[in-house]
Length: 281
Ligand code: DGL
Image (spheres, rainbow, N blue to C red):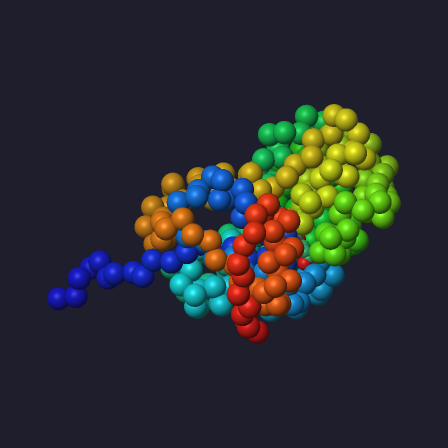
């Protein structure tokens, strides 16, 4: 008789972003759970996703998820708000049941939404994100489900990702765009007391964001909350935790040239790293 316990090949946790932004999430996950193996994939050849249509972001994200499954990942984190907003639900509901019913794909929006309700006192919250994330209204929908008393105002910041991707986040030119969007958001709702940085690239602009955000407004970075939520998920799902390799290694894959990835990723991770180029399309 076949054994009830068929052996499963364990795998790393997949972490996906359109480019470098997801590294700000990986950094926090590594702090919270250094024991696991991780496989980071940046679709740098096709970044940014923030200005692309629903169909394209969904198609690219599904390609990435399939690729990470093929690499042995049982669990994939979409460390990208744009992909979480535009593709996660379809992948979870329509693709996973056919593709790999035992595997899981999680996003970054839900853990952030859970956190903000505990932080905001005025119940007026701002979201700063890519045009794609703002247009999807995913934050509004998720906030309305969990915290219906919160009033949400979304501000699209189309220039912020290009500033980060082009290493201009510290330049005097960045001040203009950071200040412009913060002022616009707070003009639209002056009662905002908490602002979600709803894009994984934005922590690199934190210095300038702090400079122009009025004192007393909480700036919510996602990494910490995503990491804590993942830790909690793995505690509640030992069947998934048992499928993860505990080797403490991190591998970096990119769809662009490895050299370009390595030099920029070092800025996000605060250390030198090795990357490999892959084709996922
Ligand atoms: N890092 C992605 C996010 O969190 C955005 C980058 C992009 O536009 O591709 O939304």
